[in-house]
Image 1: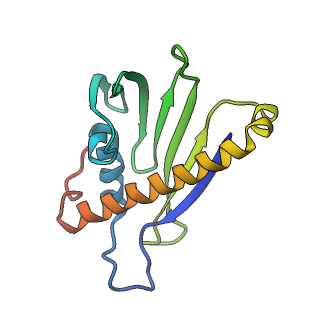
Image 2 (image 1 turned 90 degrees about the horizontal axis):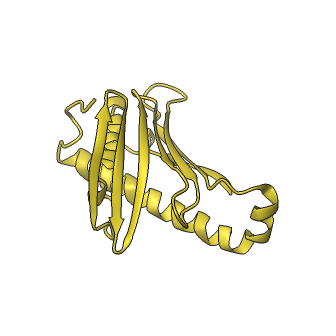
Length: 160
């Protein structure tokens, strides 16, 4: 299943919604990668096992399920999550890309790829519709947390 959707960050027509800068939004996306428990309530733990200037490797613990992933950062542009096949966990990826079609008009494009073929997607169409809906809801929750962090000034310091 390949799926993407867009969430508006700054509503330039609504002065009641505090606007983020691209840097603040970036800081929030990095924060989500480094401290995912702030965004995913059912995550038990996250251990960063390696880090360099533009990536990190993590182990996520969900009850008995352990998932290893690699997160790549492209400064002020995107955060890319890659899960390689491990046991019964298939390969998958997710990318959060900052889009700014004109100044201050910020959006995040969430792109998912579960590595399945078109034929597999056709067989799993009903299940994939449910997953798409769950992804959109999770991404809306992510943006909600980012907005809350922005309001208290937590996104002001550059993280990477």
